[in-house]
Amino acid sequence: MTGRSLRWRSVVVLLVLVLLGTAAACGNESDKATSTTRQVSGTTRTTAAGEVGRAAERLVGTTLAVSEDTPAEYVDAVGQGRPVVLVFYVAGNVDDTKVLEALDRLRAEFADYAFLAYDWKSPDSYGDLAVLLQVDYPPETVLIDRKGVIQRIWNGYVDEGTLRQCLVNLGQS
Image (cartoon, rainbow, N blue to C red; front, side):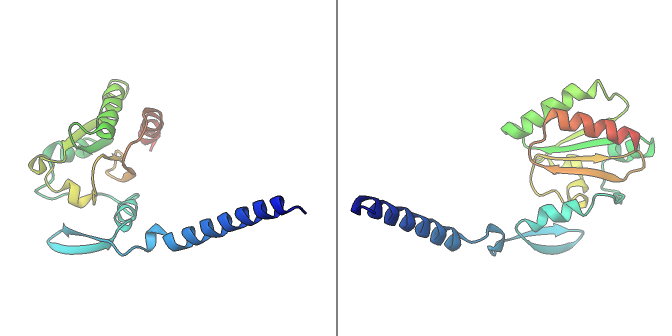
C-alpha cells in the first residue's frame, strides 16, 4: 500500500469516527427534558414535548364529551348524525391556509358533512373544543363520525388526497 492511499484511508476512518461521535453526542431528540403546561378541565397538566401529540392520538376511538361551553354548531351536527370535520387554524400561516383551501374544495363533494373551522386566536368561537380535543397548535384537523366518535386527528399539514380518502371512509363508518 502506498503512503498516499494509507493517508486517504486514515482520513476516511477519522471522518467516520467524527461523524459517529457527533451522532452519539446529539442523542435522541425525545430524550430532551422539555415540557408543556396546559390548562385542562380545571387542572393544570404538564407533559413532555412529543407526549402532547400522543395524548391527542389516544382520543381516537372515543366519543367527545360535550359541555355547555361546546359550540352549538358542533353539538347540532353530532345530534343530527352528520360527520364532522373540525379544523383549528392560524390565519395567514402557509400550512393552515393549504389545509383550509383543501377542505373548502372538498366541502361541495361532501355536502352532508359539517365543516367547522376555528381561528386559534378566537377562543370564544370554539369554546372548550380545543381543550376537549387536546389541541396542541394549529393546524389541527379532526374527523368525527356520525356517532360522535373521533376517527382521525392530524396536527400539521395534511394533503387533499388524504383528506378526501379519509372523508370517504368517515362516511362509511
